[in-house]
Image 1 (spheres, rainbow, N blue to C red):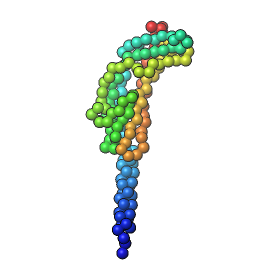
Image 2 (image 1 turned 90 degrees about the vertical axis):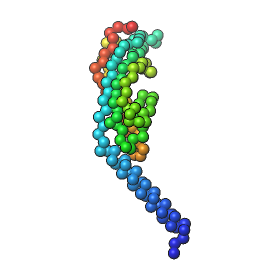
Image 3 (image 1 turned 45 degrees about the vertical axis):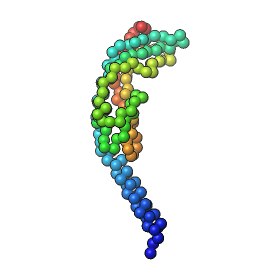
Length: 149
């Protein structure tokens, strides 16, 4: 006859094994999700484009960002981290925002005048179980002014 401690240990081990298997299965099912987020960014205006006293170029812009990240949410998604913010619900993952860039673009030198540049939107998807996913959308085709403002 087995003691109470032996039976409790066997039950606990079985429960943890089943829980681990379910977590692995949940993580595996996320690999079948093929998200298709859509992002549009407009540069509304260049707030300033100047040369710093040390000779570096500095740019600040006002951006209009429209994004639909709802396809990133699955039943295993806990939250999405995007630009110093956390989106915890699928309903909040579709948004439009007008903002100035928090971190100015600075070039080590005076090489930004008239240059083309890309805007990149990065995000991290944090699941309830499994590995974290990081992805981005690169939006090409923007150009800085040819003269300082």
